[in-house]
Length: 374
Image (cartoon, rainbow, N blue to C red; front, top):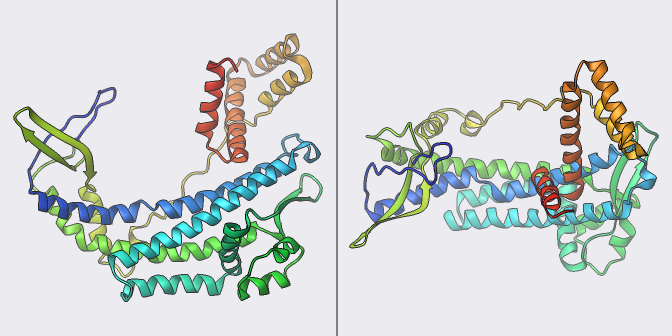
């Protein structure tokens, strides 16, 4: 299959026909690769954890960017953070149930793989207090609702610290039977329990489980990679993407089911087999390259000056004077435009984190409001 820029639909070239049984056999092999590369439940859990961290970071930056904590709606932000915490707790349960069922379905309850999964989960539980407590807090939210939380602000700017905490007395006074592990922790903790350090600890435990699951999945891929390489033998797919699809023929012609199953590239399959020769295939095949950190080419001061002028009532001639003065100093509007773009990206990112959304969703909503007349 291939598709050129601007091409409606896709170009399909049938290289070889196979039987339905062979097709189903290859589909089973492809599912093994999909279970390795598509880690949906773990990604969902990680995203909720990241959302909470970024929301707290955005609130922490309020005074850094000229705001005042006394003016923000702390109750709304706290409610949003507690809702995201509840989403994360639900995602942790989904993750554990998904992985357990996966092992049970593919290997059986008495298998070596099930023993490995249980060992990783037990290690996480025994090692991390955050994992043990939040494991039980998940049950609390299911039976008693979203826990009571607080947004705590301490320190003097620019060294202000923002924390989200749980009310210990409220948790203990609820009609909920805490496990002996969680109860022991609650009895020894302060009145306000910081949430983020516990989540960070818990994620260390879940990452350990995920590593074990990746190893189990990778071993399956190593076993089926040779058969998938055979599928690609004998034809050149360098100009497109190899895939399997269903073709039906009748008196009315040929119909193609585009519910395709993409086949990993030959290089990907060969990389899996090459990694299998090492002492640690997962480490061998994992990418250790650090992604470059995003940077701003300008400091944003020009955009801040324009926006400040607008919000202080200088949207007319006053704002125009600021623009002209900046252009004269910089020799033109290029630096100002760059500042405005960078600052818009920063503000959009902060707003999306506060809303628990994505920058694309925020921009889409703004576009919709603009088209709808506000």
